[in-house]
Length: 177
Image 1 (spheres, rainbow, N blue to C red):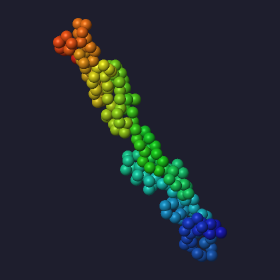
Image 2: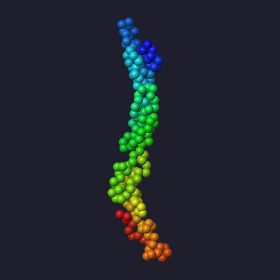
Image 3: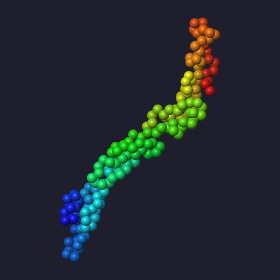
Image 4: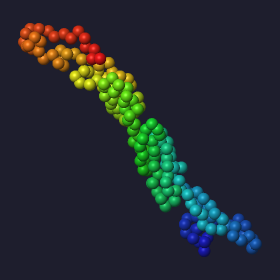
């Protein structure tokens, strides 16, 4: 009866000792991909999808986790990004992201600049951006900001536009700091 139940569950039952005094020593073994065996009763089968799916996660440099290893539970494993990245996906590699400005913002704000991480799926691409009307940007450090007053702020020289007065505007110091 129990042996019949185990066979109905797809398990293999084997009785190596068939002598009349060797009772209750038969063994049930789980079918592939399940793992497990039990003596004189149906086995509790464990199907850890990470044993197979972990290759998908590992190929993406991620960690595999199977929250339910019951053999009837399929495609519930997750791929999780490793630090400093974050992200999780079910039954497939995750899209891993990291906002480097969380860690590097002070480098930019200390000199009045804005931090920007243009691609949160890549490391070492954060930027410090100069505040308008100055120009400039640097990757991984504070920017060298420039401010050409002739381009940005000098709409007039001596009360008239430079070009109307046949004048040339030249800013001898474009250092914005």
